[in-house]
Image (cartoon, rainbow, N blue to C red; front, side, top):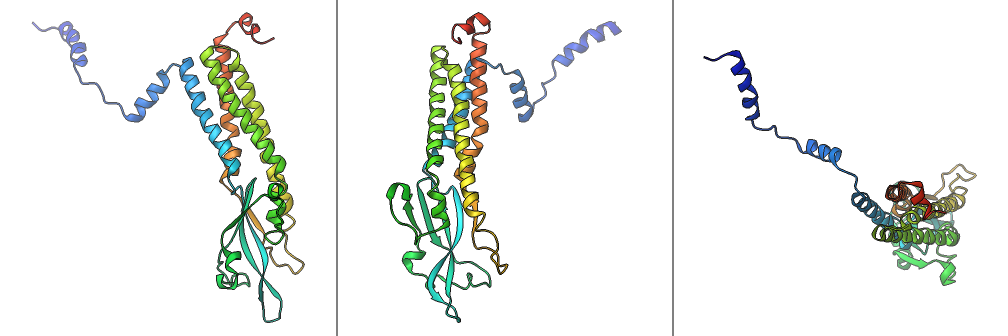
Length: 274
């Protein structure tokens, strides 16, 4: 005879036999993230991955020549109906060590848009690059004015950028050595990351000051109220170096966390930190 007690005992068994509900990929990922344990190896792997990105973001821009893109009018060998010499707007891109120029045909109805590629000598219109006169000692006064003024003042920012990138590279190696040997190098890595990022940020800020100082006065309208033909915009290397500041701080925090979790007591910390 089937009773209510028998039915109640059979219900859990029936529920247990039901097929498990399939989880979505997003649910699986969130569950794995929640259940993941932040072991030393996982934190170190994250620090190494982010540190590798930092090294790429900081070192690659040093040798690139498109930190800033500028437009600058230059006189050409052509006159208008009044006998006045015309100017053509050239495109420049400059970095720490190199400045390049080319002529690009513009659309519009002004005098600059009326100038065609045939109006400019081929050696002037083609894409050409020159080494920074700080190193080549070459006279580029006929090549550019504003771009040349910018690149001549990038000696100190370039030096600071290379120093900051070197310190961060040293911090990366100290972090690896500190984790492998379980030494105080881990803490030194965190400190070095912060110092290197400060030096590199100083270089980027100096670069901004140089560009603004040289281009801002030239971008004002002239006495007749005509808009200036000078302009500039920053390139990918500039944003790469600027954005590297955030992952650097993450690396510093991860290495500091690794060190202080490795030596939880004050006595253990004092063995390495005087």
